[in-house]
Structures are given as structure tokens and as C-alpha cells.
Amino acid sequence: MKIEDRVREELEEGRGPELDASDEAWERIRRRIGRRRGVPERWGALAVGVAVAAIGVGLAGWMLVAASGGRQSAANNPSPRATPSGQPSAAPLRDMRYETNAIVLQQGRGPVMLCLGAIQLSLPPRCGTLPIANWSWDRVNGEHRASGVTWGAYQLLGTFDGAAFHVIRVGAPQPARQDPSDRIEIPCPQPPGGWVASDPSRTRESDRSAAGALVDRQPDSAGWWVKVIHRPVGTDVYGPSDVVLNAAFTGDIERHQTELARVWGGPLCVVRYERTDAELRGIQSELTSSVAKKYGMRLLSAYVDVVRNRVVVDVVVLDDELRAALDGRYGKGAVWLTAELRPVG
Image (cartoon, rainbow, N blue to C red):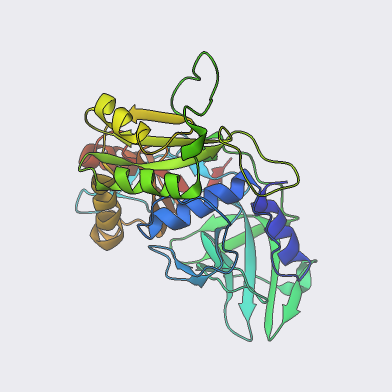
């Protein structure tokens, strides 16, 4: 079961999240959190109580992208619209029906809110992206109450007028679809003899940290990450060949490979990427500070995907013209857009 599904299931049952640090999905979430804060990928025990701030969202505590049951990617968008200034806009199509899996939450007698993007995983949860104009708890099942808060997880079909979501149909939440782009990958082909440590004596956590620090110091660094290829049974100690260290640069990868091999004796993958980590962070900063407003994006989150050398931006709705505008501004593939409201019909 994906971690997003399990968290949603536990919220539905009125419980707090119980996370299994062995899940690759949790490794992906940890990577998102770390890269948002400018912290390179580290190895070792996962801190289950860490507090983070998601850029563009502003929530602290347990942060997790809400399980939408299949976000809309930029490849399948409705027809574009433009603002009077001629700038592309992520404005919704008022006659379009949208679908999403999400938490619906009401605090006291306040507005009923649709939770898209990130939520604070507590009991009760805390979130709220869009008001729902016509919600009635009397017409649904499966809600929970705690500390004056009512919430539940649902699949919703409705319309969006740019300010509020209007429900047409409510059903039970559906399992989230597996997104292949969420997997942590090794971008190098497997060596003929497999991923084997060249020097087992230099495969400790301190060696990985030293190698990562070396990557971070390089002006042409595009980032680094680890991939677990073998999980130990009955122990938390990883073997010399269990973890592949991946590092990306925009310059001389042969030189970087040689330098890293002097520090890290475990399996090593070094590749050339198009954009440096600093460039991507600049794009991320620009998107969250000014570009989102310029293009009319309802920004939910933005983070650097170091594995795929891009900035991932989650918005409420999107269209083809917005995708083209960001490609033109930053280069094709530099920004990957996803939307929490998926057009249907």
C-alpha cells in the first residue's frame, strides 16, 4: 500500500499517521522535504518527528502531498485561456467538471474546505485550500470529529469557478494511482558485474556524507541522492553494496567520478544533467515569489526534483498555454506541472 493511501486511510478512521520508514514512497517524500529546505540527501534513520515548511504552502508539522488519486499532468490539459494582458493563465473553465480525491474539513462553524496539496497530519488534521460552496455533512458518510473539527476523505466531482468548488457528486475515496515519475531511479545503466562496492571499507554513513558534501561544493553540481537496491533483513545496517550513491553535474563527469570514488567506496553513478541545482533553486524561488502570480497559478507547492533535474510545481488547475509559457521562460522540461483538480468529461 502506498504511504499516501495509508495516511488517508488512518485519517478516515480518525487516527494519526503511522509511517513505515522502509517504504520507497516515504523515501520520496523525505527527499521532497529535504530538497525544499536546501538540505542534501542524507542516509541513516528517518526522523519521524521532523517539522518542515513546504514552499508555497506555509504549513508546518507533518507535511504530505494529498493523495489525489491521479493528478492531472501537463500532457492532458483542457483548452487554454488567456488574461486580458495576453499572459497565459491557469484560470479554470467554468463549464468544466473536475474530479479529485481529497480531505474535506470544517473547523467549528467555519467554511467547509477542500484540502488540496499539503496537509498537516495531526489529530485532527489541519488544511484548507478552497471553500466548498454547497457541502452538507448530512449527505455524506464516513466523517470524523475531534476538537471541534469535522473531516472526511472523499472522491469529489464538481465545478470550480476560480474561487469555490461546487460539488456535483461525492463518493468513497479511490486508491491513488501509481505515478512512475515518483520513483527514485538510478540514471546509469547497471555495470556488467552489477552494483558492487569497489572498496567496502569506505561505505559507512560518514563516507556517504563526505561524498555528498563534495558534490555540494562543486559549482556545476546538479545534486545527489541515494537508491537502496538491497534491504537488510532483521537489521538496520546496510551492506557495502546495498546503496547506490547517485551524483549529477553539468560539467566534467569523468573528473567528478574519479574524485568521488576516492571518498565513497560503494556503488556509484555519476551522470551529466542539463541544469545545476542552483539554477533549479533559482527557478523554484522565482516561481514561488512572482511568476505564479504573474501567470495566475494557484500554487500549492514547488520543490526541486533532483532525480529528474526539474522543478515540480503542484497547482489547483492548469492548461496547455501555461505549460508552454513556462517552457518558453525556463526551457522545456525545467518545470513539471501537476494539478490536483483533474478535468473529466
